[in-house]
Amino acid sequence: MNGPLDTTHRSAPIQESAIAGGQEAGNLDGLPEWNLSDLYPSIDAPELAADMEKAARDAVAFEDRWKGKLAEEAAKPNGGDLASAIIACERLEELMGRIFSYAGLLYAGDTSDPKRAKFYGDVQEKLTDTSTHLIFFGLELNHIDDEVIEAAMNANPAIGHYRPWLADLRMDKPYQLEDRIEQLFAEKSVTGRGAWNRLFDETVTALRFTVDGEQLPLEPTLNLLQDANRAVRKKASDALAETFKANLRTFTLITNTLAKDKEISDRWRGFKDIADSRHLANRVEPEVVDALAKAVQDAYPRLSHRYYAMKAKWLGLDVLENWDRNAPLPETPQTVIPWNEAKETVLSAYAGFAPEMADIARDFFDRDWIDAPTRPGKAPGAFAHPTVPSVHPYVLLNYMGKPHDVMTLAHELGHGVHQVLAARQGVLMASTPLTLAETASVFGEMLTFRSLLERTTDKRERKAMLAQKAEDMINTVVRQIAFYQFERRVHTERRNGELTAERLGEIWLEVQKESLGPAVRLNPGYETFWSDIPHFIHSPFYVYAYAFGDCLVNSLYAVYQNAEKGFQEKYFDLLKAGGTKHHKELLAPFGLDASDPGFWQKGLSVIEGIIDELEAMED
Image (cartoon, rainbow, N blue to C red; front, side):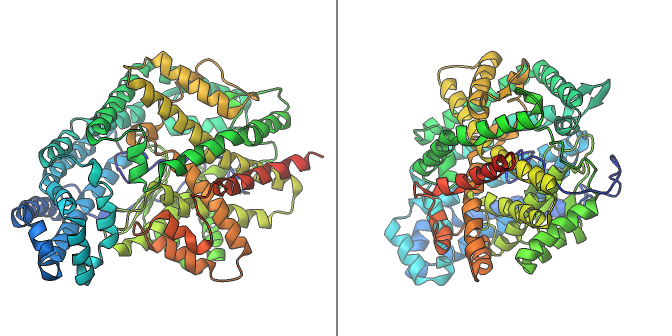
């Protein structure tokens, strides 16, 4: 996840895919910027002020009307007025979500603007105060006996409609605290975790990296690591290391503080393992994640170690320096890809799968739901934010015309399509667990890649495309599991006291060496490269969701390739379900089961197959 919105994320660090371009480097005029007026016209809009007041007023009235009465209502014939209470709560969540989405998106557009930063902070505080009046609701619902709530759902279709949400809510029951403590946790989040997240965002946005005398923000500097000129890549790496090192004290404090904050919360709630709260939020069993992590770690030698050894040979090197890992192959086109070409590339790939998918994605372009240019102060990375069901999602990119950026566009539009289709479930049930939230995004990437590969007849270009897809998958699967192992070690050691910047760097290097293998040399300075990864800050243990999604999509795509008909319909049913079904229910129509120990091997074998094909090309 990235930036100020809890429902956004920074894309997995997928790398370049070979797509022909036809534009002079640096010419990226006319990139779209989003129009947030579908949420609110401006910071000073009367509609926004009125909604803020309405949310605060209605929350108090909701608490007065329902607090202490839910069990009594549920026990009445047909569940009494419990359906009315749930519907009223949903309306409040929708209203508050609309306000917070506007504030967060506006802030993401320029986190360096003091006016926007103050506005975002003020909105966050006010909505936190407002939401404290709603905390009782979920807690009281969970106090109702199982038999009573089951009878109410069976007797009243209006209550039964919310069965998935109520069942989901009750999974949190063993870990919820006394009402006053829950309220304290919520109110303190603004000055606690929320404040540290904001400090991280604003610190990263303000960082500048000196390359050839020019002061660059983070995104353009990271982009130079994909430059065809090796000297440029080294300068970028050195600049990143220098600035990260200068800010390590701040990043180390943030990391230690948030790890301790999580440990306190986990201890009070009764979570045993450091990642159990994430597994619960993802509605995935710990043993499923353990099986995924082990399968990927066991595959390091067959995947990343083997691939990077091949890449070193292709580049004429004995080993890759850390700044060579993302280097383009000599076969990779270096021209900048115009925005309209990127747009048509993705839309045509989507249309080849299902016209409805392309139609939904086209709205993002036609209705100004995308913010594409890089700007000083803009949040780095990329995300798709669903806002609320009554509006529509928005996509943030930092588009610089690289093939990698086209894949990121395909990725985020996959999220956007998923969010549009799931919105019909309503604000309480539209949100998808992170493990399944990556399904549509990675599938969108795969559709785009396969569409381009099928058009390619030149052997050298095909090799470049396959190699870069292998890198995409290694970054999405191997790298993310390495990140997960880094987090596990950091949070485990933090329970025994603070970690120094030096110790954090040691752990980082150890997990990176294990995952990248002997063909990649990690130079002095690389030990600081953990510091700018927003997932570690905004959503601890988020990262395994990328590996989960990629392996799942590899298996799903194999089913699609072998399906005679009906796959698209089942796929859209999966997306439309939002958060109403468990991963077992969603995958069953495709004959897939993530709890099957062999499931992850199927996904990893796709990556291995691409590397096998690349190896065969060497003969």
